[in-house]
Image 1 (cartoon, rainbow, N blue to C red):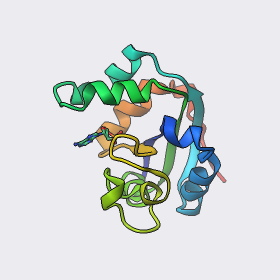
Image 2 (image 1 turned 135 degrees about the vertical axis):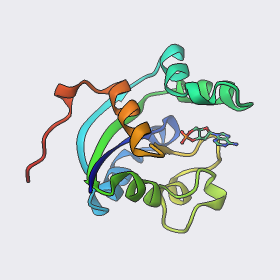
Image 3 (image 1 turned 180 degrees about the vertical axis):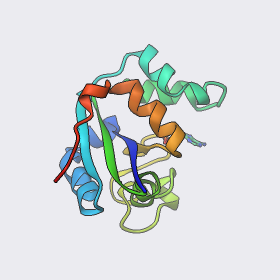
Length: 142
Ligand code: CMP
């Protein structure tokens, strides 16, 4: 089924000038970018986005990193988009990410891991809505 998923290009990958290379991975995989913008998260925005991790030991470091510089946020659309996107991202820890995946090629640690992708259709709905209004999601008919 055609799904939508949510993507972040994190501060490390933006700083390393890897936005275009990562967008190329999305498009090559058949994922259409239907909304996109650059944002610099406030502490409150980062804490809200990652609220499910608030009790984890890495939460403070995660929020500090995600507010350390601008990020790109995207909504991606395509066949089986949630899983297709996670497959091209690779494992959360780049040390465990398969060869040729975004995290294997652009990330240096589990904390600075270049990109985020929704883990389910339900998370994708919440995450897309966290950053984009309905009017910002462009209908792609070709
Ligand atoms: P992300 O998909 O953005 O979701 C939460 C982030 O926390 C994750 O990517 C990692 O960058 C970071 N993180 C740091 N340590 C861990 C860990 N032990 N397990 C999962 N995520 C972690």
